[in-house]
Image (tube, rainbow, N blue to C red; front, side):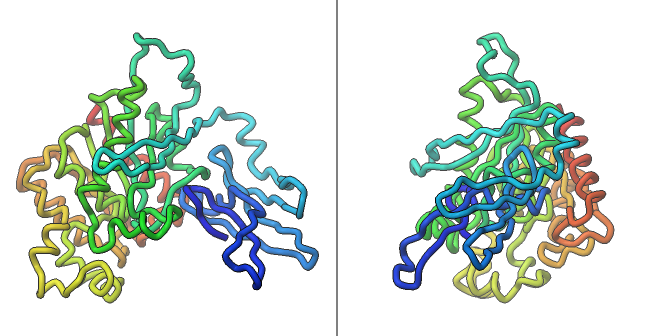
Length: 352
């Protein structure tokens, strides 16, 4: 099982030619329904039949089977009774060049139910647009079902999610562009260039742009609002705000100190600060909500508290949402997923 440009696949290799992969099945995933991350699983019978979880942006995991020289076949439709009564948002793949260095970036545009790009004219009113950023940062989004993004689109937003530099599934060189360099100037332009594409098409309203993301996406959200005032509102979910203090509270401290920086924080404090969103807080004008689980040990809530209090000191409109009992995986419970989405949508609604 491997990822390739936002699509999770299953391949077959032999011991004699391990560098030659024969594709067996595609669109594996759908077992995590919050956001469109890679997921899914498969098994193989003694006769070579592959059973796997198949997903598309229009449905979460169903079971499919693939046999040699035969097209894959879906054998379950677990949510057909519900989705046959609902019009879902439409997901379209786009590619564009980053304004930073011309890197080709992959993204997906999710349009509200009933949105018809062919019916739009020069007088059609553009819609509010939301940039939703994946975490990791060594991870990827793709053509997979996402309950959260469907809810955002159903609320009337065009949603853009992308795989900026550092995302997996595009080779070692692309991933290493953020090695010891995250957040960076490049990933900022990778995302902004995608929004510019939608604005140039006339789909997205430049006066109603919104941004959110979790974990690594929360870091980038807090970073971006310190770089630009183009957004009407932002929600930074479970972010890292200060790499120096973060090393002292996260459960991932050995790996962060060893692999994300060249030295310990007390040996190069300025480098840790330069890559911290807190260093840009003096430039933030965007109303920004912080949302974190109280039992988050990966990006502890003390990080969000720093940004919240800094914004309060500056007089920037802000709000702190503490999710009781929630760990880093806030959406592990459906009720928390709904609470999270409701807070994001309400914050954006207030600032429309």
